[in-house]
Image (cartoon, rainbow, N blue to C red; front, side, top):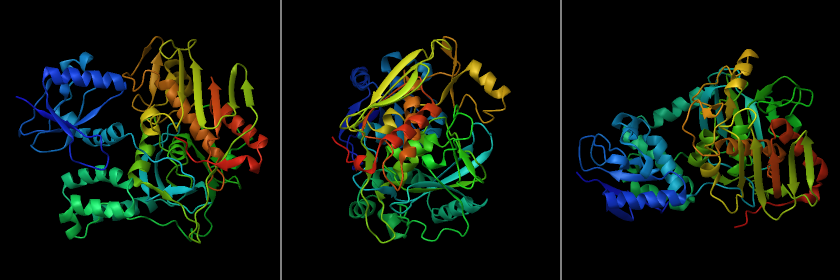
Length: 490
C-alpha cells in the first residue's frame, strides 16, 4: 500500500507545496536531503487508510484517516525496521513532532531586535528541581520596557488558578482542535495582529463563529504588583559573591538576602537568545527552577508559542535595546580554563571542552555559533541536554545533590560509552555548555538591555563560576558609551 508524503517550507501556509509517493526512489531522495541538512526532518503525512500502518523507514501513520501527523525520516539508510515507532508511541509524541517540524522546516524563531521586547502572553512550565527534587511551577509573563527580567515568588495556588481559567476557555473544543491550536500558536505568534486575525478567520471560521479565540489574547504587564513582593533581578547584582563557587548551577539572591532561586541558566538562556529582554518570572512552590528534560528546549518552545512583541514603558513608549561592545580584549582564567572576548562587529560564540580524562565518550568537542549567520537557537542549541559522568553522579548523590536527576533529564557518560543514548547532536555536550554560557551572560541584562555582548566570546573548559566572573570583568571594563544598538546583522 502506498502512502503520500507532503512537505511544506512556507511557515505561513498550511498548504503542501510538493507531494510524492513513498517508494524506494523517494526514500533515497529524502535520505540525500536529510544527510545534506545534517539534521532531523519532520514530514507532514496524510493517510487515506483508517487503520494503523507502517511505511518502512518512512515512519508510521495515525490510527484514523486525514489526521495531520509528523513522521521522523532521519538517517534513512541506517534506520532499522524495528526502530519505526508504534502507532501508540507515534501518537503520544505527535505534539513534539509538530512543533519541531515547524522549526525544522521554517527555521524561524523570535530573535533580539533594535528595541526591547517581551513575551506576547504568558506561558507555564512545571517539573522538579534537579538538585532539590522538589516540585515547582514557573510562569513567564510580560513586563514593561526597562524592567528587565526578574523573578518573584508567588503564593501556592496562584499559577494553578490561572491555568484552570485557561482550561475553561477551551472546554468546548475537541481534542483534535486543541492539538491543532498548539501548532497554530507557534505559527501565528510570528504574524502581526492584522495577519493573525486574517489567518484565524481563514483556518477556523467555525471556532471564530462560536467566539473562541484560537490565539491567546495579548497580555499586558502587571501594572500594580502585590504589596511587599520581593523581586530578584536576573542580573549580576543578584549573584551572591559570598557563596560557594557556582559549580553545578547559577544561583540568584534577593538584595535583602531572604529569597534565593537556583538553576536559572536554562530559562535565561532561552529568553536571551530569543529576544525576551523584559519578563516577570513567577515561581511557585520551590526555590529551584524545573530541570524539565535537561535542556532549555521546554523554555524556548514556550517563548515560540507565546510569541515576542515590542515592550512598552508604562507611558506607552518603546526603548532601544543596547548591548555592550568592548573595544579591548577581556580575559579571565582559572588554571587552563578561560573565557575571553575579542572585539568584533557581530556576536559570535565559540566553546571547547575536554573531558578525555573523565570520559572518552565526551572527549574533546568544539562548537561555534553566530546568531546572525547560523540556524536559530531552538535548532542549534536549545535541544542540547545537561551532561555528566557516572563518576560525578555518584559523587553528587553522596553530597545530597541531584535529587531530581535521572536518565530522562541528563546525558550520562560512562567511560567510552553513554549510559542513556541516543545523542541529539554528535557534540551535544559542548552545545549545552554554550547554552549555559548564554544563560550566564544573560545576567548582563540591566534595564531590559541585551546580555550577550557584541564580539567574539571564546570559552575553554569553563563552567558557571568562570562564566559569571567573565561577565563581571566585562561589566567592569565597559562604560555606558560601550553600549550600542544590538540590531542583528544579517
